[in-house]
Amino acid sequence: MSKAAGLPPVDMSVTVGPLTLRSPVLVGSGTFGFGEEYAGYCDLARLGAIVTKAVTLEPREGNPGPRVWETAAGMLNAIGLQNPGLDKVVAEKLPLLLAAGHPVIVNIAGFEVGEYVKLAEALGAVEGLAAIEVNVSCPNVAHGGIEFGRDPAVLSGLVRAVRAATHLPLIVKLSPNVSDIVPLAEAALDAGADVLSLTNTLVGMAIDARLRRPRLANVTGGLSGPAIKPVALRMVWQVWQALRAPIIGMGGIMTGEDAAEFMLAGAAAVAVGTANFVDPTSAGRVAAELEEFCRQQGVARVAELTGALQS
Image (cartoon, helix red, strand yellow):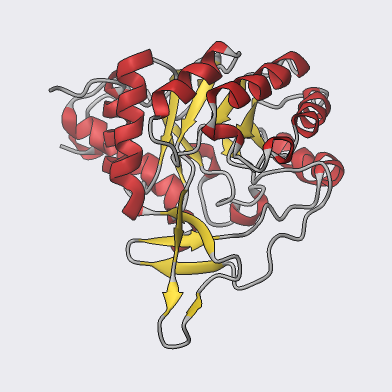
């Protein structure tokens, strides 16, 4: 069956914690710029929200190149949080998106708790933002360089501080580079997170055997794309089974059926990431394919897929 069969339209709206979105399909931070770069290619009206690339207090040039390398079924990146800094984002990037009426979620990153707090306070004063997403895969310089997202106590302290600094809905994007994701998810929720994003990239590396050198100047980078999808699905399912938390699932989503799999595992919404580099129309296409999947399956509301996996 298809649209031509005369079936009623699918309700694509979803509720994700305190957020009500017109579609469950978002874009992954760092894969869609600040939205304007994709406006001529992707049907932004099909997206539930645009998630910006990570924003830091001060401008960052990022890591030296090479900092991207294609791998089997994925890619490695070591961009290093390149961005124009908070002031320029607030003054120049966000007004364009907000004026166009697109829901906007700003991803923030820092190396000390105080940096996150200042970012959250400043963004809380920007009228019209949908939410803040906290990137906890950054090294915490005050704790010997351990990632904020690898220690429940450290993570809890960060989330509590950010929660106290803003009224905006708070999303915490967890790192998959841990032995057990559930205690981290629970710590984030207990500290005030409204929604969890699962997951960020896995640490990996690539080597040029002939030159006997790493492919990335940074040596290691974040692995994303279809190669990590089974790991990301497993983590979404584990957190949903344990906590029934509002989850945005991501990791190798290339098609509408991929998106459906994440929702069945427990995600209330999904984010398309690496696919945006392969084809800039990907996020809108995935949303359209997910809608058609629901029609074919006789699903009247896409939200009915969340957690509907049968064992």
